[in-house]
Amino acid sequence: MQTVVIVIHLMLVLAMIGVVLLQKSEGGGLGMGGGGTSGFLSSRGTANVLTRTTAFLALGFFVTSLLLSILAGYDRKPRSIIQNTGSTPTQSAPGAPPPLELPGALRGGGQPAAPPADGGGAPQVPRSQ
Image (tube, rainbow, N blue to C red; front, side, top):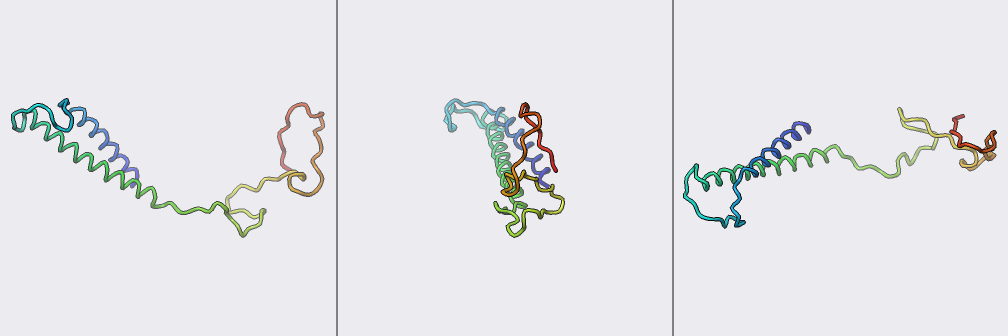
């Protein structure tokens, strides 16, 4: 559903860009340009058609924008910063990766980790136990 609305939204955007670029610049701003004869295919009649088309495309743009924002927030659920407050550190959700094993010094108990055998030259990659 959301993909269909996005495609319609993008088609409206492209059509609106094209219609706006087709409009004649009157130079006066706010419709204060020079006068002209009225009629369907005259410059003023064409401007009315383009102005109405732009208004309908803009209305469609706003409607699809609102619909997309509603669809985006529809499945959103509030999340807690602190998750699994009642579980112990060794428990994990099904399908979750196993918890990381920390060295004894970082875990808060046991003996500190032994220094590397090569005298501490290059950094070593931690290995799980």
